[in-house]
Length: 482
Image (cartoon, rainbow, N blue to C red; front, side, top):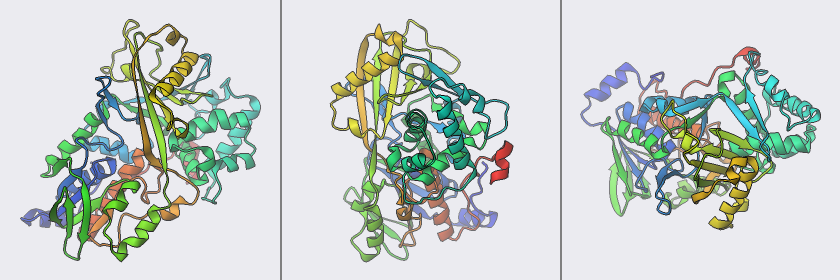
């Protein structure tokens, strides 16, 4: 493992101590799992409480009763720049379950495709040759985008209180550049509309993805998400930890020597507590004491963003692509699950069906639509992009709306993102909405869990505890720009 969990002296002392410090972790999403794995490895006795009967939180899967199929609640992907998420997957032994891609295909209505890939040119110019060949952008669009990328990549862009859309307008971005380049990239990455995304978050996405050719390699899980995160449960149990499903934290009572929690109408005492809950689920468990008022106040500034996943099963293959970015329509991404979930090294045949998942981030326009309306919309658009789908029969379908999928990365929100330490010395926060330096992503969730574990171990007197993985190093010309 590349991380250092405690000094030799501290580890020996804890081993010799017959009573391991106990930690309750509320929430079995990525933040809670990351904190639990790090602390279990550091010889804390971890008990993780999860209200659902499975792990993964918003990144989970289950057997859908209407279709009989195991479906992910939403497609989740990662990039090589997500160093802590990659380290977490290595830690729990699922790195071989991620399939990596170094190309990204853009498709226009009608079926014309464009492929972004790296060239031998050093970063940040490595994708320039393929970008300059994009037929869906004209010369004026490409010139405007290139200037904007240079500014976002090479200069600091603090949160000024204005949106990224206003930044685009001030920096001469054409409407076509906004609709066909910035929207597909940033709405998918940040799950919010451009007029509500802070400049600093947009700049971070661009800068991190340009720092090296490897940064933009995209990883897609090849097994259902809950199968992926069940390995984290195994990791915790193998280190004397415990997972309690269908157990929801109701409240807690902190004091200088312990934290008493109430779970499913029962009280238990632990040495420490990590609250790995979403921002909209935290307020209900906070005690009614004055110390909780500032945190409650911060929570009122967060707003949720929805993501909708549309699952369609066809009776034949509709495309040979594993995934694609879809332009100019409601649907933003296609993931060809019947190809992604097959055994590594095999290829789906033309005679087999296609199971696809379509993703719509910031899907506010779909919240009030019925399942039938959304499926009809998706079918119409899929048949615009993939001519083979016009002859295919839809076998079954389902729609999964994650209404509270992420928090909105609005200008000024960083001022309200709390640190992992709280007003109570034995209580800590984890979650992608806390102060991680990253937006609401799986990487941000894992970072928050590791930061909470670092804060807790330092509070417990363990010296030199460190869990965060180093950022992906810059290469090429990017080495000269910090």
